[in-house]
View 1 (tube, each protein chain N blue to C red):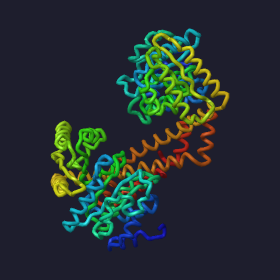
View 2: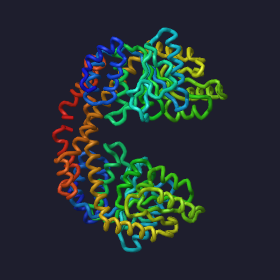
View 3: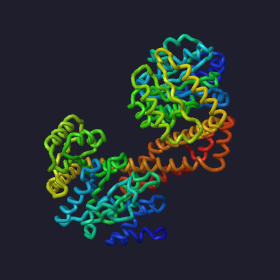
View 4: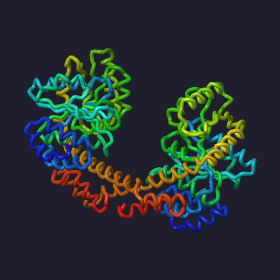
Length: 317
Length: 317
């Protein structure tokens, strides 16, 4: 994999070679210089895709809902790519579909591309790899990208919040709405979906969400609509997607989308800088000079601040 | 304050001038170059003090217990300094005693020095300022230093865990023992105190703690003793202090103390490096060149990784 020319992979992936696309994403997932090389190639070619983030508690039915959404989009003749963010997965993202049984039915559809992403252990982790993977999908011509998170961990919420439209999925039952509020999901939701809407408590949950929306300062013109769905039957999925399209239209018209994307890129640049400097700090804390200075500090010949100064001398920090 | 020579303050503080000591601590608390200058002066003079960290849930009676401990130590003719770590305090640490009513009785005792520390907003915050403040107290000749945390926030636990002997205070009642486990206090405890031991549930809590200790891999020869106290009456405080002295003796004899102190200094050096690099990252994310590069990234003329490379060029990171 390491000897494959990313440029050639890009050309192949743009021509529809799914294996080439999968290999590009694996390079991104692994991090390091190859990932940056891929990122540099992807960047100027990207900027055409629209991303929809889907997040919510585990068990809310996000995967089933996403599968139903894929069915809906394919019936309309549209293509779609899905990036499933799962930091806790024991599987590497290499496997298309991975363990995501619900999505198996779309596995052989050439208009659908599904990818799980786990990416543990490399610098900056998912928070840096996810936007890069999205840009690769974007750069090879995927224009609709669904980013689905498996849980509601901090990184996952962060990744979902950076989509163009962010969908928060809850279920009937007061607890979920409260959870959504606690986990900071209220702040990031552009669209609310009450999935498993055939269960008792739908109206109450809708009222609870409306009330929370009344109380929160949304700071804009868009009030997140609340859509009821049953992912397993596809009920309400058309209305759900319409709500996403409505948000897209509103965000494009108001300039919110443009401002969001700009802010996102600036945050990404800051994250890259921080992760590079972090790598540098780790590097500074090893090697002969470090060992010597630690010994000097322990013997109280040098104080920690002066030792830090000396280690940082060549770094200009 | 800024024009006072730290060297002169040190000389005065070593001679017993409490106002000079308070000013040194204020300099440390404010951070920045003055703090580092104080740190550089304190470091070679430090290394003689023994520190005892006291932590536990808010309401566990840590302040009352500390006050009773001071009374006990003073009755033995010993001097003591107390550093109360309170990141959430709206007061600056400048006020000796601050709002700590329980300790007022010791306010006029020249053998006692009590200081609250809030230190918000400066780089590295309490995690960096607390060890520096301890070194100042150490360097001016205070040989017994109690570090008491007001809550169990991450920084507070971290600071308490870096003492030579760490005391975890709980109350009778199962919930507290569980909380202690959840908050990671089990891992850091060298001595357990069940304070407010005149309340119901003492035996059960003792059994719960013993059981948790049985289950945990302590990774050493020292098993934390469990002492029952009533801070408000002083009951059990002598046994509590004896347990601390026993731990000190064991840690000194086994070499654990020396290794802990070495590890602490290395961690501190790493924290200083990280905070310096973080300051550098913030600095990189401002200025004309940064604005130009952000504009170039937004126009897709430059990718974020190349922009980061360029910003980091002069930094060697």
